[in-house]
Image (cartoon, rainbow, N blue to C red; front, side, top):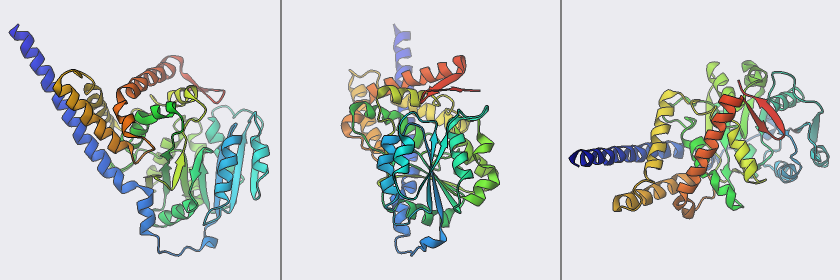
Length: 376
């Protein structure tokens, strides 16, 4: 009996250590992220006059079955304070009216790919590469079709690039319209805080965020472009690393209200497939120290779900909810109700993670937008 009591005491002690580690890591994650919110950077440049004629920005959008998203995105791009030099839509063998919708807008060039990517190429990288080959601007802006930029979006990117150079990437603010989209909360927090893209634990980011990437064409050509990472499922991370390896700066920001998106608007199945395709592959991309911190952070979250019927357990549950709410607010339209429901969201997170492990390690293939992608 005494041995059981000692064992229980050790378990409680270990739970407390893990939980306090979670609080400390959360504080560091959040502190460093506040330095990387895009609207704060805008204010630093709000009095600066920008000669738009000096910045010929080619916007390149890989699009596979994106007719609905393009009908929303293209008017926003044509209403920018700094107008893009050209907008290139790469129709990646779509089966819907992607090309028709894109062609209905003025000053939009459509590059139509009618075959599957060549052997060794991943679809998105192949589409972006073809967009680059047809571009004429001095600056390249790679956009996912589901982003929703404000009218000062391109102007903000250009001004920030003047200061930092190299590669800029943005993680857009998550818009939520349907209940299932709230299940993105743990994924969003992992991508934003635990990916080592915002300056913690290492100042040098592990890669870039994929939805929005801005660079000069000169630098893009120097690192070899997407041709150098043509077979990578994690093309955004690999691209950022290439810039770092060539001695170029990589700067990542949170989009806040400057650029938003709905990550997976077509349903829970799309969300499940989308995160399953690269979740386990990206687990250690930030390095081992970053990975260990992330694991310890996650253990803290899951440990807060134990002993929920004790006073200490209830206290940990509510403290965890408050911490997750504070951390979630800069990333999307999450409410405190979402924070209170975190056990359900993190249970779903585990299901997706183990499915991703199964697909990556055992089947060595994932599916996305009707395509089978081999995972090496």
